[in-house]
Length: 157
Image (tube, rainbow, N blue to C red; front, side, top):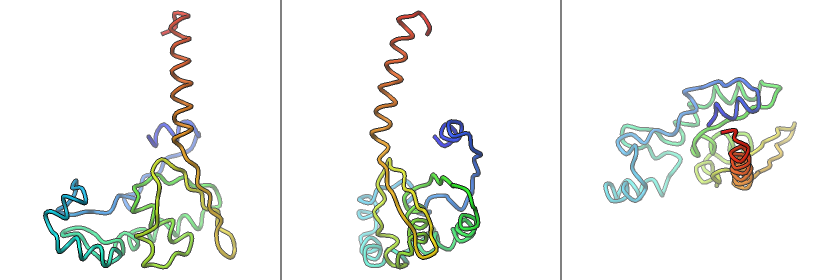
């Protein structure tokens, strides 16, 4: 996905391990309901303190925030637009920092799927915008389908 976007925007892709999803440790690949079934007390502990709850052999949100410190410093130093494609926990942490959200609130930031979230830092805060990509994706699919149909009719397949 990111290669396609980079090619379309004619930009360079930089991959940082620091942008990897939160490490769920022994629960990697589990759904939340599977984790609740496997470890009910851990699920309660996570619900009570999502920021500091550390998955067994994995990470907490606080660990992710600490891991992202270098990335955040690079983002803040850059004078050009930056596109970050990452999982929700990572986006929550970056978004929370850029919008000066209280540390305990970061794990609870609503991050919608299939949206572009723009943050424009200013001297005293930041401006945010959210754009839904599902409409654009549907339009692109319809345009591609129409082009393929037209091409087939013309014998260009």
